[in-house]
Image 1 (cartoon, one colour):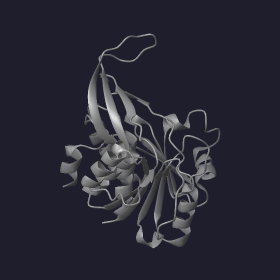
Image 2 (tube, one colour):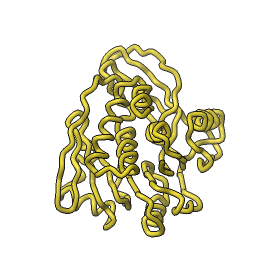
Image 3 (tube, rainbow, N blue to C red):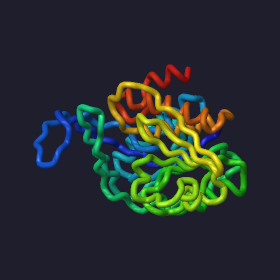
Image 4 (cartoon, helix red, strand yellow):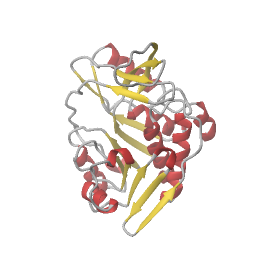
Length: 280
């Protein structure tokens, strides 16, 4: 299996289950769902671990008890956390407000500046995934693509920063108000000339992949929605798994759709037992 390096956040999520959907001016009762491991690093990484890949995480947490808890939880579940950086200070909880229809609202503090340190030896890595605003991520991606055969997959950033990569992934919501040109030209302006495919996901409506001279649509998997948290992270994990196993881009997208369906049918952000059973 593949050696995969993830540059993504790991969090301590605190869950609040509301009694009804959110609306302006409303009053709500909640049940405290407690703490759980979350963030793109965990949501993407654990499924890849279950699929048999060696997964290492580059992230940042504080030197407090919550930071210790996050690293311990991630390590216990199979993620290599030796490249996780520690900053002096507290690791704030992420607040996830869940409504009965499975939708969620995320409330988080401003993250401290995260600056990447010494680059890894890229020849060791089969795939590199970027889903964070860490400073220096673009330099890491460019080095990975120029110095080795590492596959670079990236999520579209929330701002206009570059994301050099082979595969760029975005949700349709991410694109709203930002793409005033053809999708492929927009993606190239973000990802550069090494771009091979631009995937745009649209929930239950499936996903579309844009390439230099083609456009293909892949259907979503039908499932019951319990908790939408982590759907995009698990979709990306399925795509990475597929590509590392030699799938075509549309085959990898179908795999991503399966992983996302397992994720939203599970009351957690990390993939559940059904994905484990599928992979075994």
